[in-house]
Length: 179
Image (cartoon, one colour):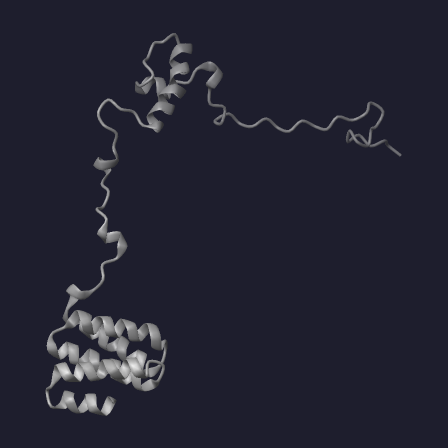
């Protein structure tokens, strides 16, 4: 059956050869001869300009044949086909969706997002405790802490307190008795 397909292919009877290759593939689908027929069929499709069909056969073969030498050859031919015809390359799922730009994700004028709402709510009490001198959205309200919100991180840390010792325990207080 593969021999007949090959002979028809050699005689440039491409449609008949393609049918004979497909018959061989169907009849001997689990045999190595089917992979030879698949490679020949894909090459025939390429010669006919049916590049999408050739790519489909190469993909099918790489899926079915795993890491066999025939599958390796199919991968090489597939890559060559894609280099010659980049329009055949499948598009990644990410590129099919329209990219999101910051302008598309920005809230509409007058609308607030969650971050703005929480910032305004956080700063609002600060403005009220300073006498309401600055509105909550002004830079002064954001940078001027109230006395109860003063930043203590700049102050040096107090030394740790010495552990409490019983009044009569002189060894714990560091005053050892003289012998």
